[in-house]
Amino acid sequence: MIDDDNDDRAALTTRQMRLTAVIVATALFMQNLDSTIVATALPAMAKSFHADPIHMSLALTSYLLSLAVFIPASGWFADRFGSRNVFRAAILVFTLGSILCGLSHSLGELIAARILQGLGGAMMVPVGRLLLLKSVRRRDMLAATSWLTMPALIGPIIGPPVGGFIVTYVSWRWTFDINIPIGVIGIVAVSLFIRDVRDSEHAGRLDVVGLIWSGLAMAMLMAGIETIGRGIIPIPWSLACFAAGGFAAFAYWRHAQHHEHPVLDLTLMKIDTFANSTLAGGFFRVLAGATPFLLPLMLQLGFGETAARSGTVTFAAAIGALAMKPLAQPILRRFGFRGSMVAFGLLSAVFTAACAAFRPSWPLLALDAVLLIGGVFRSLQFTAFNTIAYADVPRSRMSAATSFYATFQQITITLGISVAAASLELTTAISGHPSPTIGDYAWSFIIVSLIGLLSVPICARLAAEAGDDVSGHHTAPIDAPPGPRQ
Image 1 (cartoon, one colour):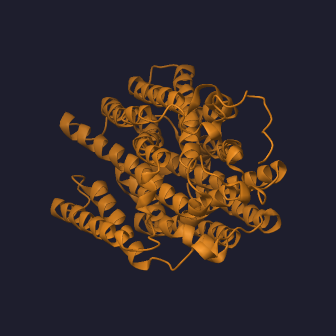
Image 2: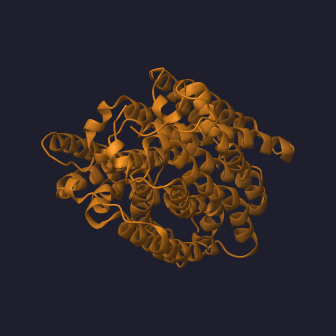
């Protein structure tokens, strides 16, 4: 257990914690709303740009890749310039990027605007989380995480139906314009109610060389994964991307060995709970990243549904996620992190694989039931991962930890979309179909479910008492008040 009692004296009160969490959740809400709306609108965008619908995954991966490249610097900027200032500026950049996305007239323009959006998102979400984690007591971390994620889950709930309605009855361009009023509200709320948090004495100098090597490694490796065998660029160029990415990754590893403040602190992986959440969460997020990409495509292109009807189906998963979020804290207190995470991971993979059985003849209620239950378990698993990752991280290393964890998180979500798109093209090519059929979508769901299932044995390796000081498992009754400070 990490002793941060001295820092607890400056911690937020319960009321302040909840207000800060809800305001920070505005950023998560905007990002989640954006991602779910864009996923629903991809077929309409493809038609507008005269592009292959499967290649429209670039609209998602370009944004997520931009996040992964720039997130490593987020912790340093927050410590150097103040978390509130960076958070507020990030919301502004994200909002401007959204405006440019809505003005795009080609896939290339959209990708460029999404990269700008990603720059804002790279500073917005991890810095917002850092604002909260650096301001609460360790025993309040689970409650703070729940307050942070519950409002943010409203985005995935309203995203699919709102996106489907906009695409069907108005224009896909409005799916980006909806971020403008949300961004303005977020900027005003941050200015009025968020207190500044900075740690300039631990900031050091920005690791520019490390940022270049890590960004190049992630960009090249993801470019190789996104393009290999998909006809976007010649295969030798894809292989060259893998080679360049591998070299850059090795160069960063060598560089980080001798830098006092590396942009991605690899020594954090010596913390068992952080390493377990990072690795197991990586496999799990491949599953989570693939599902919102595959489902709207299958419903619209495989089943022939409208975007509006597709949206009413896909938002069932988000309803389940929001409905069960208040139960995350008592469940983790009752069963502990290890047992809960093994069960959540297994059940999430099972219900994602169940999507492979979807057929146009299924009643709407049956589709919603599978997605809702799957959303419940994915939501609970995300809460567990996002809490235990920081359970044993000293407060002085929290900036480095949030940057590292958020970077790896975005890489694996991006990888999930790329794996889904690649598996869909592969199964379509093997079956000899000119375009994906329902069976091809089914195999893609099975593939990503098997990848997500790999998280389960990693979670099982956690110590039985891991995270008990955060969850309260075996240390206090569920309704017991916190003990007196030492």
